[in-house]
Amino acid sequence: MAQKQLLHLVLGGELSNIDDVEFKDLDQVEVVGLFPNYAAAHAAWKSKAQRTVDNAQMRYFIVHLHRLLDPATDATRQKE
Image (cartoon, rainbow, N blue to C red):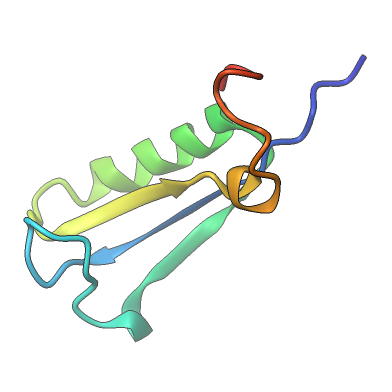
């Protein structure tokens, strides 16, 4: 049986303040892509994060879209 698709979004940009999750300029937020599972999203996130390690205000995030689309899908039902 095929594994259920669990959509994840990877995005990032420069933050206004490193203690908060507020982007400095929303027009500059980079959408890295949509991924069918956490492993693929994590690989993309890690690649982007490593390229920007010298900029303390640059952050990339993984958004668990499947949890927003279907709140019943959570870590207790299916390990990511």
